[in-house]
Length: 123
Image (tube, rainbow, N blue to C red; front, top):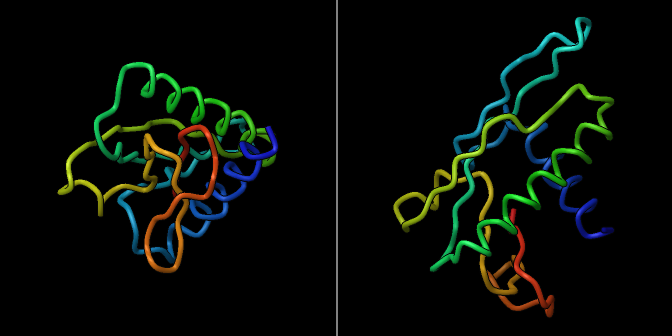
């Protein structure tokens, strides 16, 4: 659960600065917090490598948990509204999140194994 919170914080921090970021094609659609309409985050998730139906369900579940944490952290002012899953190397650069089906971690030299025994998102 702690890793999911950290992932949600990373996601929130990355999307919160989307106006300054040049990675991915996600957007934040302004809401109306005074009338209880949250800002809507639209993002794409790159699925690296062959992904089974079970792994896709895990990715969707992780995004749902991240959405609940994000809503809680921002007092319901932000929510993940639309997520588009993409595959293929041509779509990698346009993605806001890379979800890799093998245990990896972003490093200065690229991606490497960090020792986790479950798949996860690389931001």
